[in-house]
Length: 305
Image (cartoon, rainbow, N blue to C red; front, side, top):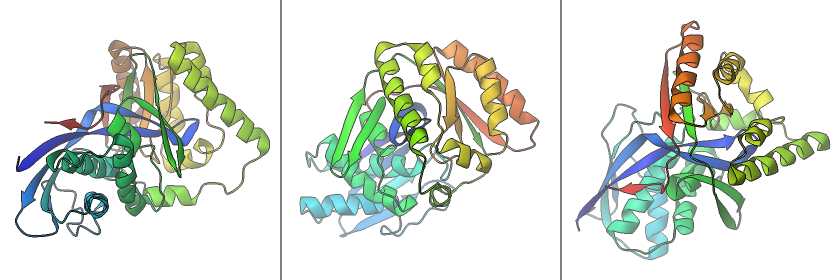
């Protein structure tokens, strides 16, 4: 096999009460990456889109992740990575993770390296570090594993796959950019113990609700008392979107990643599309361009095409 093509899904991370530890994969949108063996040594990057991402492999998240993977494997195989992105950089739905995860999964398969999913997440986190300045896995883990995941620890890496009912997500992406590094910079350095306890309680209840399928408990646990109150100021009309979505039947919602995308969970596709109508109507009055997506929760993560 001389080349391989993969589909790499968008992801929602920082799921309300699960900052830096909870995420899930979406059926759409997704990126496609083609990886081809090359005669020349090194990694070359070709961007088959209009986003203007770096082609220098040491400045590109896919290049950095694959470089570390080849270093650990002790392989000096030349590779050409052609990326066709549908997930806009800076959208808050895991654009950098889709690139780095798709690349390492594809190279692992193409070269028969035999790395585990956990090891692939470790490599992908090198790309996340380049993109955000932080070593986090709440986008990379669901991108590779699929479904809902809890990242218990990144040092050492400890990923917990969570069972969940067949939920749907509605995502709205205002066409503004919020850089992850900048969104992290405004976070509080200290939090009151009472807020920490409430957040821990919500996260525990959220995981229990996923496992049991208790949607009422899921609704009550989708509360963030630490990060959302600070970051929502970066996203125009955040409160109005959440109110419109809940009024249309959403279980709950919040900021996707560091924003500006927002998400709302629903119990089925019909409900998710009604929520989409409601939030589109709400946001149309803002004068800000936006996209919306209605998606099931993707199982299996990055797919080999």
